[in-house]
Length: 100
Image 1 (cartoon, helix red, strand yellow):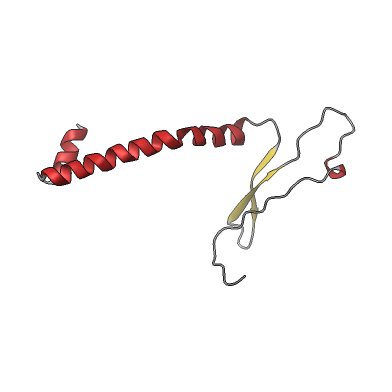
Image 2 (cartoon, rainbow, N blue to C red; image 1 turned 135 degrees about the vertical axis):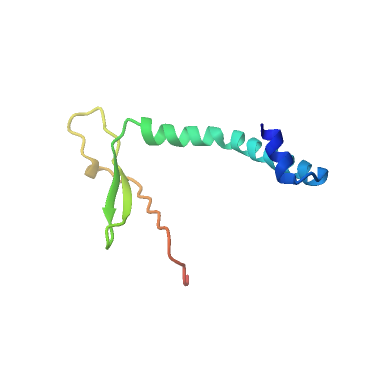
């Protein structure tokens, strides 16, 4: 079935058909190459033991959301996250960078 779709899209031109096949094979190869990265990201985001507060709305109107990754739980019962300095990552998206 895919061969018929490619042949129809190429409109009978052999050079165009081979170009479409090459693009299709390249797209499949790329998806197979980046699949492990997707699995790793998904396993971190969904299977991680630390608490993640997802989709917290912010902004006006409240159409933007953020995720907060809480500090890891310690084995000691009196552990406080505030007692340690943890790195903070802030990802800003959208808009435009004007200077600096």
